[in-house]
Image (cartoon, rainbow, N blue to C red; front, side, top):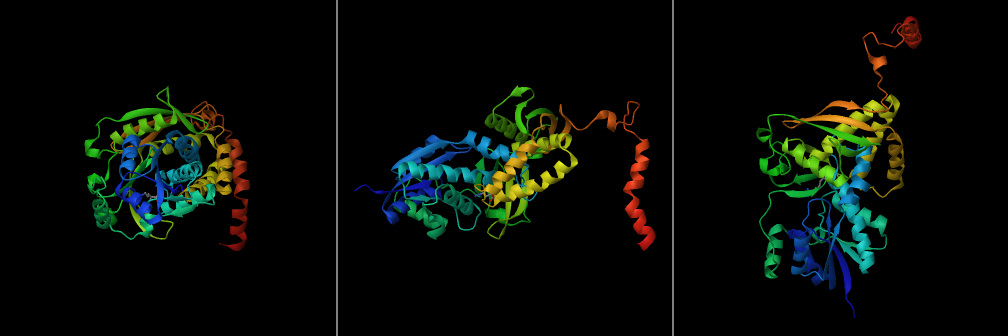
Amino acid sequence: MAKDKIVLAYSGGLDTSVAVPWLIENYDADIITVTIDLGMVDLESIKARAIEVGAAKAITIDAKDTLVQEFLFPALQAGAIYEDIYPLATALGRPLIARCLAEVAVSEGAYAIAHGCTGKGNDQVRIEVGIAAVEPGIQVIAPIRDWGMSRDDELDYAQERNLPINASKSRFSVDENLWGRSAEAGELEDPWLEPPEEAYEWTQPVTNTPDDPIYIEIHFNKGLPTAINGESMDGVGLINYLNNLAGTHGVGRIDHVENRLVGIKSREIYESPAAIVLHAAHKSLENLTLSKDQARTKSKISQEYADIVYNGLWFTAHRQDLDAYVKSTQRYVTGDVKVRLHKGTCTVVGRKAPDALYQHQLATYDRSDEFDHSSAEGFISIYGLPVKTQNQIQKL
Ligand code: ARG
């Protein structure tokens, strides 16, 4: 009789490598690992390790382009930044991972999906809610949450079974994709302690950055970045380019104590050079092209959108509705933004758009002024009428 199959989300690290024999022993199933490249993954070496630790089959998926087109760019257009600071890299990757896992489970005929999330984080929620949305019938197994092994227990377990594990203990718990890198745990758990330089990998300390600023021009078409300095780039290429360039100038470091969905506060170190540059540039182009009312409503939508992403509610009609609103706001968000990167700062220094609502002849104080000054008098008298009336009568 053919064995049952379990699909395991496999990163190649200690947790998920130990999970392979653990699942085989506890569930008597064939393990099919799935490794998904969202930007920073060496698929071939991870695939080889999966087989070495006992997987019956190792599947790899390059989902970089899908991540950008279906998740990162909509979030950019929405202005989605959690708690005004976190561009949501990990949170945006999880629903895509969940979808890929569910699709593989169906195509391979697996009855369950296993993942390596712990019981304390947001990611277990995002992955499991995502799986339930895409493939409601499937069972979920969370070995790391259930088995109660410490890191040393895991190492012992691996040694007893001769697993080829690279036991060099990293100081932090790290997750990364094209939109950013996050580091937590270890000494970072002391929110008073300045993060050691080793917590950062994508960005230079300002003491190491070039003395001269660099200027770049980013072109947006309907709210999506399409070119830098006149050179067209696809989404993945453009984000990689900006991560490198802005990271070299020390841009993108974030030190945040954040409110997790599961109720705890945690101290997180993020590096998101491209996301920070693109959000700043995109916002400045919106300032030029959206009306005051649009901009005010959109900023509320941005917050709601960020909460939806952070809280694992990607596969909802609510998110789709907000996407429809956001898309409509982007009709005229086309133009160019000039950004200066220097010593850890990213500053928008210029913007232009064919459909800009900024009109020089209305804004100017020089002779070309076309604003009707005389009508200001009548405007003020009507505008101030209720204030004047109330003060006169009620003596505020
Ligand atoms: N706190 C972030 C989030 O919930 C990042 C979590 C990433 N995981 C990690 N092991 N660093 O989106």
